[in-house]
Length: 187
Image (cartoon, rainbow, N blue to C red; front, side, top):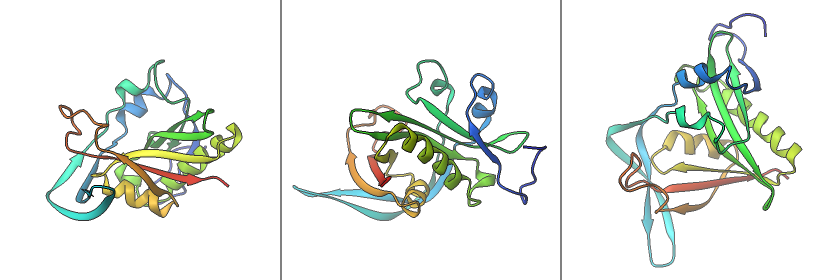
């Protein structure tokens, strides 16, 4: 890619992540979201329902990456959206051979670049990797409070396929949240 791009210009280049070179850029990437809506989980004896619910004040969360970039990371392949002078996005995934599923561990787009197709471009790179590895589907987990991400995943063809009310540490940052799982067949 030749030189930095303006925000009004073409999409940033998507390329494989290169650690340790990309470490500083990944640590600088704004992974936060703000939402005034969530999906509340309503349980009955034999089922769960997701109900869109307004929240006030709005929820703001961020997902620090410093513990996710070392040799002990859980993902095997990552891609970044590079603007020339900064990273605008990041996706990381791992192929799981036992069930032929590619699990997306991270997908973030900097707030200034959201709504410009970068998330879709990063997902396309992840899908290419998954297909080459032999995956039959993409699979991911997100919190029920990450309403913007859930909306994005659904627009990208992912469907809700499960949940876990005990995944997150009740003493941690995600206390009271429910893990939601989404999948998309690769066909």
